[in-house]
Image 1 (cartoon, rainbow, N blue to C red):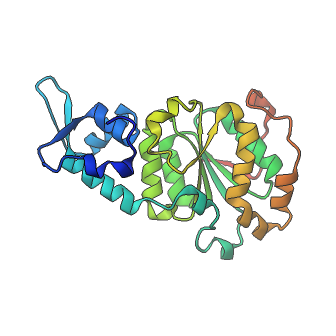
Image 2 (tube, helix red, strand yellow):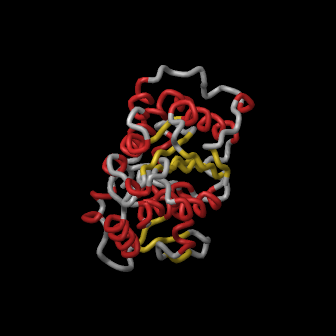
Image 3 (cartoon, rainbow, N blue to C red):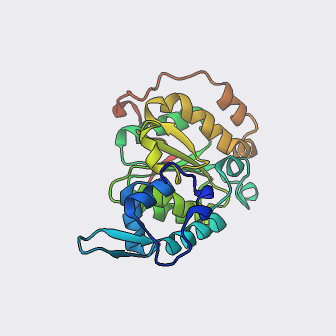
Length: 256
């Protein structure tokens, strides 16, 4: 059953409530890492029992229910979210708000530098771990979330899917940063479906156009020339190999 897409699964799942899958089989079905599935079982998202040897057996019925809930509650695809401002944002008059959840100080500084150079009117908040990032998301209700899917102490795939299902995420853009190449990202295929992904070695080239796409309308609300200026600006000398020490703090950058 490996390689199947979630939308193709229902007809292949056994209807018998006693039917079950191994953790590895569910991981392949959902396009997740095995650890992500184990955490879903621990949280009660999936029902399972253990063999005498301690291996989980996940019931097919609980997997069917989870898939149904996921499809019913997931936010619109990233492309449509990025094209639509969050409700009430246009009337607030505040600058576009970006939340970066990234544990690497190097990439924190690099994103700060890019935002300051290309989107000076944007308000960037930085969280150094997943837990504080989740708290900041609820407090800030950002227009754009930029998150590293590999964060210590938290399952990034589950976090991304959980945020996308949350009602506060309805109008928020999403960009995922990762050091994983395309082949390694296959374990996260379900979580990254319809999500803009930036490979960290290409961050300087690929991130600014995605930010402009996500915040274009909000940028024009605060400064009509900002979006076009960002799109027309020549590439800066910043690179993914730049030393973090070359970036300096800015009033527009706030660390959570």
